[in-house]
Length: 500
Length: 121
Image (cartoon, rainbow over all chains, first blue to last red; front, top):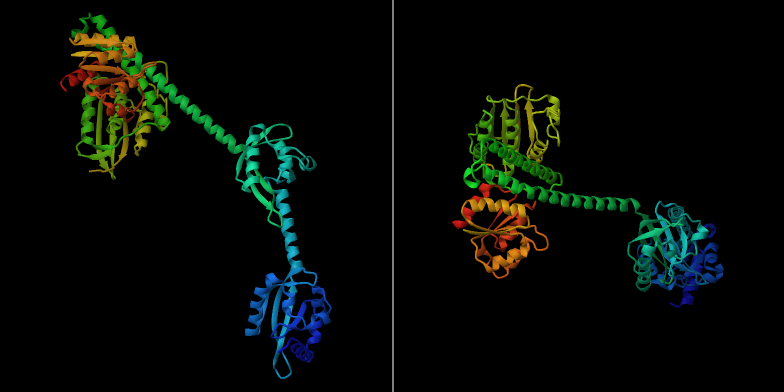
């Protein structure tokens, strides 16, 4: 059928419609199309929005009011209506006589003639272009508020690097007014040390359009500088041409300070290490000949016979050389434990062998004081642990006990046994014991139970803190039970790795 | 046994000399590491006691130099050091061909035992 024919017929039929009048008065855009999409009716609002008179519109095709870019989608909507008789709130695009394209929400049902025959659609179109504009406005306002009130520093620069806008935080941090900032080259706000980097960054950005987060030192109006992290986002015009960038500037002074402090601490740790290594070398080197000469003098076969007084003098030299040696070793161990640099090597070991060796090594020393060292170990235990370090802990505890047991009646008992999947060691003595208060501080570095000038027991006060450090580094615990005048019991555990 | 000691510390070398010569061994020492390397290369010794930390030319330099022509193992080098380095840190010297270690401050028995150990190996 020809367009003209359809036009006339549709028109006739449409005019027979009962509710045309009501349609005409509604504020929304209303049109009615036939099955070919010819507009058979519309209201004033529709014609006006599209830039026509009602008479012009009648007889035009709905496709005449559909822009090319929305055509495919409109066909889908139109076909759906034809098939189902109903379409609800489908977004389509319309084009006015002047060529303005706008979005509208389409809702369509069927119109029937008096015989109940479908004659076309009843289509309501809600112009949402205004809504969209409003939404955009809201977005812009929201964005502007975010931009202006952000705690981070924002600035917007054009492609040449001229600042076109900035937020309050930016102005406040740098100490400028908006007038002073706008129109300024960003390099004027860049510290000298970052100028080169910034220039390269901008040149790359202009060339590739890609901008990466960069660490830049900013310069304030008063000339002071602060470190910051710059994160850019590109800005494009309607044609997709790069016109500038929004830059978020995060003040990282605090982070930077932390980094600097950490770097400083690392340096100090390294200096400490070097100092300790140097001291250790410088102490051990002169100690070596002292130890060797005094030990050689104690052997008549080596350097000849000495008289009694000379022997005593040499004994004194030798004993104190050993003492000094132990102090240096303790200081180094304490330092290594503090820095977490003590190395442990866990190997399969027989605990009862360790206990027997320790007893053999220290028996003589205990007997020299008239006391006895009793090894009560009966269990055969195999674990994976660091035997030399465990020996160090035991030796330290036993040496302590030897120091504090009474002359001639001293008794030191040691033992190792399996307990709760671990190995528990003890060193018990019948010495002077200690107060609860002292027990609490016992494992602190440099702690001495007796700090009086007349104290009988020397030492650096490092021994027990080293015992604690080693025990804990191996995964165990150390504690003390004591009562003044009734002796002291030291206990420590070590994990039963590979316990047999 | 013919024993050579290379250590820049005069006091230590003199003390070790007093001990070793008293036990009847042939002992020689130098406090100049370059001189030491020359002696090791040119003469035959049954054992060499070598310090690590020496100025300009260290014991490690000597070991590296000797390791170049693979004869180092015949030299029976015993490193005697005051270094705080752990055993594992010194292990690479063993890999290079060093016999063993003595830790400063060393005692007489450790030296005498070591001489016996090297002599019987």
